[in-house]
Image (tube, rainbow, N blue to C red; front, side, top):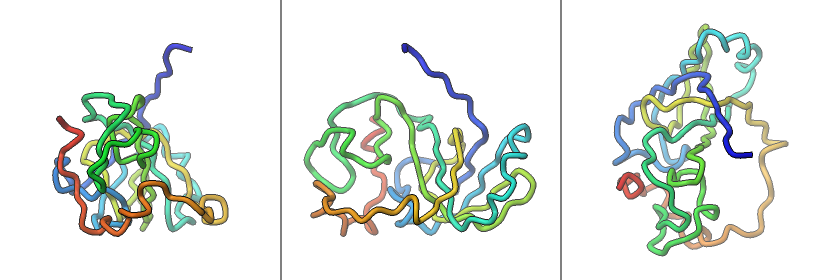
Length: 162
């Protein structure tokens, strides 16, 4: 397999217009936004409003390079890209994922909060968040174990834009 092509199903609208200063995780954000699902996909939104949270899968459209070792936001050492949560856009496939609160749906517009995504980001897919399926009791959190306390204060500093 040499290539996989995805087409956006919508566009994410966000108060965050540039990388610098954007929250690095949805749990560290109080930002509100909208997800505009293209009309040809709006039928697929049926029953989604019954969920309080959804998973947005999107394309890091501003990602400029791929790096297999990067310095993540909450540490000063380089780590392998696959040991870094989806906030590092320098991935071989620039795919991001965020769990956001769904407030309401009007036609093809989803009103969300806890957004950590940039304005104009292409949306690839939406999935409902179900705690019984998606939560896990973890025993190891790797290098983040000593750094997770930094989450509330850490914002995007454009390190992946260069």
